[in-house]
Amino acid sequence: MSAYPLVLDGERIRALIVGGGPVAHRKAAALLDSGATLRIVATALCPAMHDLAAHERVSVSEREYESTDISDATLVVAATDRREVNARVAADAHAKARLVNVADEPAEGDWVSVAMHRAGPLVIGVSVGGVPTAATRIRDAIAERFDRRYVTALTALIALRRQVLDAGGTDAWRQVDRELVGPDFCERVECQ
Image (cartoon, rainbow, N blue to C red; front, side, top):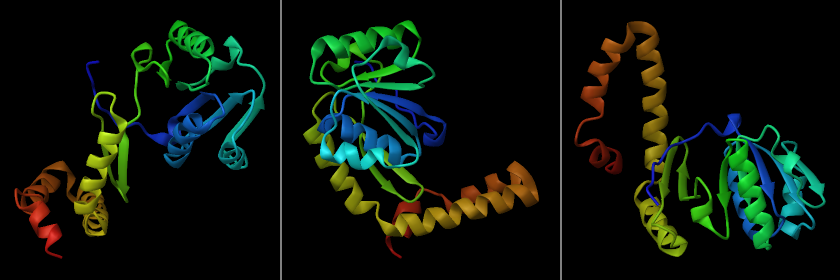
């Protein structure tokens, strides 16, 4: 797969999760954490998925998947334990020009999940071509370095950026950016 990484505004995502097991739960929980609104369609829900169902941005239909479930979803996840259902979800999503993740056959989908490290405004994703355990190990190593010090520094930098842009525009911000976010930025953050 050729990969093109991007970050989506979670609050703008309307996700359809088809499946109610642990894999569907993991993907649903990550989307919910990003701010997405979820519709879950599954014949049965694992206990952890039942817990997610109580969230205000989650609706659940305990039944078989139907093609009309794609509806207004911006992202679709096919994560059932039945190959034929996942294939049908993928085909329906493609027919409606929706981006789909297919848990049991990633090449059939348009996107894959990454191992993600989130520290305040910092979001780092790791993908290693279908070896999730390796991605997780790399993510954990990155998380050790990019810790709370970065949350503090980046939160302050974001506030300063907004203040400088509001007061002096983009040229003023470019000057401040050159001064504060130079080649030694990470070293300075880590010395705090």
